[in-house]
Image 1 (cartoon, rainbow, N blue to C red):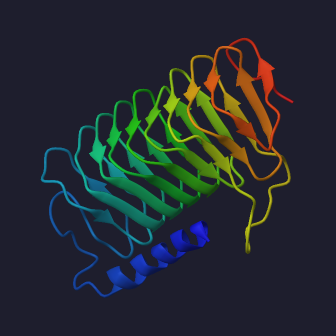
Image 2: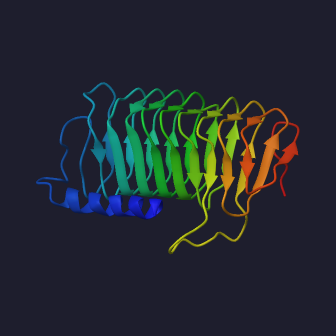
Length: 226
């Protein structure tokens, strides 16, 4: 149900933007609203929302933007930038070093990558695609269905991890999702698995209670490959 709502919100964006007069033009120098085409958010201009339907969104380093949403396209956030939230339906999200996302990061079909010193106030969620953290701080948890989750460096995840069981038209991937929690990482709250996964936890990581999986401990800098 949760992921169905996300897809529906993306379709709602299509309808909304299609009704905007001049929607293929810039609304100002910083945030654009388009139906077809990529959006480039420049640093140093007044913050507002950035939205498109068919296109990527590129946010400059040290730029400030409100809500960021696309349906068919990826989102790239430059180092030191600030945004309210990031949402795409079909596309990856890459967040650069020392950025701040006030609320949530969501992709339905796409990977999510957070670099060093990224701070996210809310949750990180997708259905299909890898979620990777490198010394990032999350105020909420991580939720996926088919994606691997890699948490390394001094990452701190409040709100736990939830790997959901597929529902509706969501298909299982052929291989089991890998969940890796590396040395120095902390995951507060429950690690809940509604489907089978391979869970690797470093002997130098700190995690909450695990439900639905058995942790495989490892030493060294990275989890062993199967």
